[in-house]
Length: 71
Image (cartoon, rainbow, N blue to C red):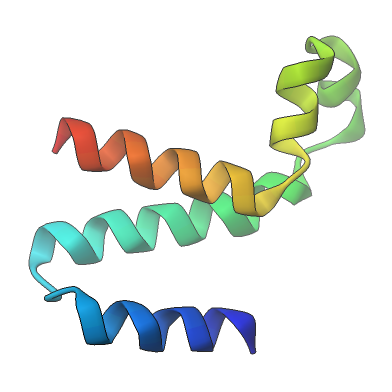
């Protein structure tokens, strides 16, 4: 429900160009996939990085910000 509401808000404010759709799709995939990473990976990384990777919302936001800057 939250994702649908967020997409509605984005649709009202942002034009869906190929670039924007790519950024949005990559951020959603990264955000949904990050919580599925194995627990052993989290123990091998520094605490600050593992805490970011545990949050799909944080991973999605960081992915979108990075892609916005480099594309």
